[in-house]
Length: 240
Picture (tube, rainbow, N blue to C red):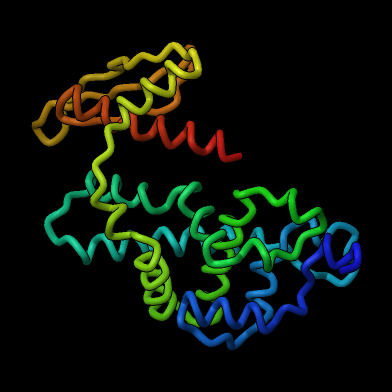
């Protein structure tokens, strides 16, 4: 294989893209350019004079569509779950680490159009391309088919198991802080009433920097909420 073929994946991988979309989303491509764009990293258009676009705009769209699809699925799958629980469940599915994992599992990394060594492709680039692919599917097929396709993909990759996981984020944060020699503390920053009910707002602070805040009707609930948000902040930093 020549040097250029080792470095680049161009837009001529139509059969592989067709196969990926059919196998993992159960859809047939109508407008191919959406999918080619979804898999085109910004590095591939450096110096491009042909007007090709990177996947950044489709990633922006796909992020919103994916968020809606997961929220829709969670809302319909548990009629009794309240907003706080639904938000926690969504964060277990729509997070950078999970999207990177799914993107790799379905073979997006091998189809990325990039101008760099294949070994230099970062996990986030794969997860971003997955979001862009969802954006492309939405443009190609509309919301209803996209929703069904996204749910099928996520079910294959354990959405129902993930949303019912119970995670002690406070303990995980304390363990992370011990391992990394970080001073960690939880501070009540506000006490207030909402709809006649007392509420607490808590911030989790790492080495003097706020990494997450949460609220709840008790200090314990507020601390757990802030720990969950703080854990997500740490994950996103370490995945960058």
